[in-house]
Length: 105
Image (tube, rainbow, N blue to C red; front, side, top):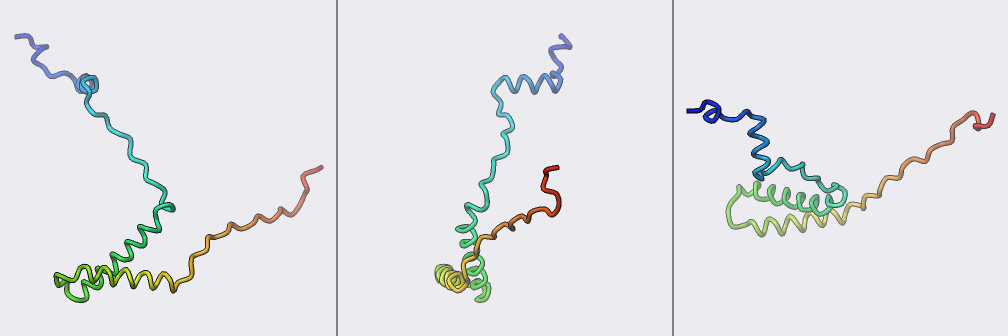
């Protein structure tokens, strides 16, 4: 029996042959969408989810009231949102001119 044919190939060679055979390569990590564009609906839903959970917790998680909890939580969150003034985007501070030379010299 031939010793060379019975030995497993070295790791580097095995990786190369796997790549040649069409083995899936490691994909680049998926890029996440910017939070600013999707934060409003997700934030609103997360608030409703939290309020609904707290309502269920107060009544001891008794089954059968999930829809009522969710609808009451939606009403509560929307009432709070209407009561709060809309957040204004922050304006960046204007740069003050430097004191000193004018740059001509």
